Length: 108
Image (cartoon, rainbow, N blue to C red; front, side):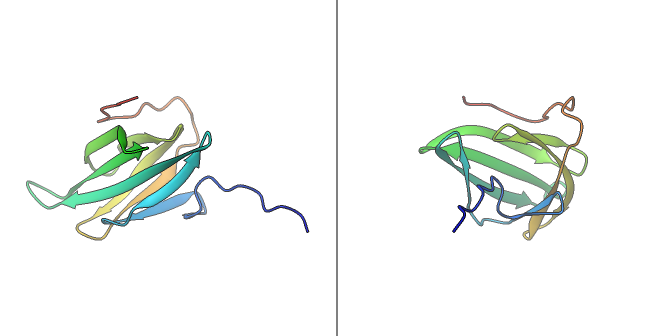
C-alpha cells in the first residue's frame, strides 16, 4: 500500500482556506507542529486577527486584517479574501511570491 502524501494545509480547497472563528488548526512545518487561531472583531469595523504559534510560543500575529491584506503562514503567502464577523476568515493562496506580509509581528 503506497504511503499517503503529506498535505501541509489539510483544510485548503481549490487554493482557498477558510479559517473558522476560534477553531484551532494544526499545521506540520519542518517537523514541528504550528497552531493557528483566528479571532474576529466587530469594532470599529469588522477585522480579524490570525495568531500562529509553535511549541507554546508565538511565531507571528497578524492584526487588523481586512480583505486584500497578505499574511505569511508557515512560509506561504495568503491573501485575505473575506472576513465574516464571528464566523471565519477566508484566505487564498498568493500565486506571486513577491507579495509582502502586512500587519505581522514576527516572533521567530
